[in-house]
Image (cartoon, rainbow, N blue to C red):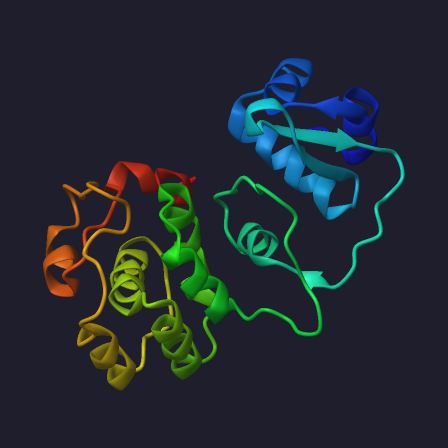
Length: 209
């Protein structure tokens, strides 16, 4: 495990994720974790290269951040599954809640984001607030289904029964979280929530490590 000082010495300058893998001789998932570590210290600036390829400029001087942590940063801080940050998202004038990040994550058509967000259900403080954001993002049944999946692998707080029923009765939402992807392992949850879960039990093994 490299510390920030060693990482900066090895990676200073412009890198793709493949460059980081090769320079550190690590797998892609580990390279992503190191980028996240350096980003927390303000030592990474993300840019778009040719063909929209992500480039990471790693510096010795911390970048001054304005505002509060954004969606990707909060998700990565609270989940063992780390997510690519396509851009640096910051919030000005307010702070994001865990409940809003869950609703945003459920609205994304990204398999890894859906897996990562399961960990955030452990930190829900206000079920009514979660419902309000779920309605705003039009992901009420998606959130219910993800919550039930989270319960199969994590110790999460019990959802308020009235909120659960309101999520379950939502009618104005699509059946697919990710187009044409269905789970082979969570059929009961899919049938209950009328939503297709885009991953299987094997995809959740990272939570057991």
